Length: 288
Ligand SMILES: C[S@@+](CC[C@H](N)C(=O)[O-])C[C@H]1O[C@@H](n2cnc3c(N)ncnc32)[C@H](O)[C@@H]1O
Image (cartoon, rainbow, N blue to C red; front, side, top):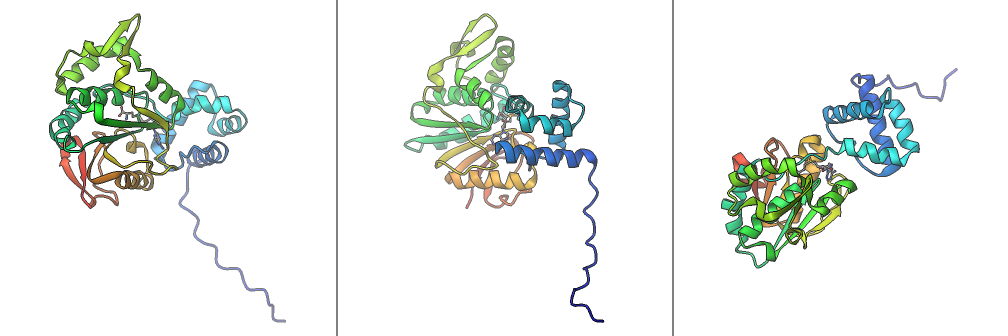
């Protein structure tokens, strides 16, 4: 008897074996995305793993599956997990050579524009934003600059808006500021009270702090400078390309892009679309 049912195709080769941890991580990131719309699916496995294992230890949970189950049912726990996943670590004038290069090689060109827009993407708790605001004020540009400071972590954005930083960190910030070509006395910019330094609120009076994800959102303004430091390092190649695409689209003709000291556009799809402007400091200029 001849059958009308076609034979089964040969089984496709199995995907390269993933470890249990990798499977659990993927499921956790998918659950977070489906439940809370935060998209960590294209962060490097190494960074996901480091952050999640640290969170497990802090939250007293035995494994990633247990964390997933709790996160799905407990938005407050997700809020805590978000603090571990987003790595809210920053400092003022981090990598002083970067800020010195901005001051010496980018600001003179920004001066040629009637007004300037700067996007600080992944601004964390605001240290980078205050550093740029101080630099731009010293260079006579702040009053005609609009800064957009964005991040996905609402708690970090709230801290950034307050502009209050631990006093014990300020000594290091002072040294960074001087190495970044600071023109004043750093203490002019803050008032010390108890354990905290409150930075001059007029520095960020016109900064727009906003929730924006490089993984899911789109471009919102035309800018002359995008500073996105120590963020791409956590993204896989695909997500790095997406973020670089947003920056490319946002930047005006010959606009500037500044990345972190361990980040580069060299192996991205955008490597031909930017020129190196100050290569050691990872400052690029839109080419096409
Ligand atoms: C290590 S901090 C860098 C802070 C600052 N740019 C600096 O260099 O000091 C990384 C920041 O990127 C933010 N971030 C992570 N994923 C993001 C995304 N998809 N979109 C926007 N920001 C993101 C995190 O919330 C965190 O504040």
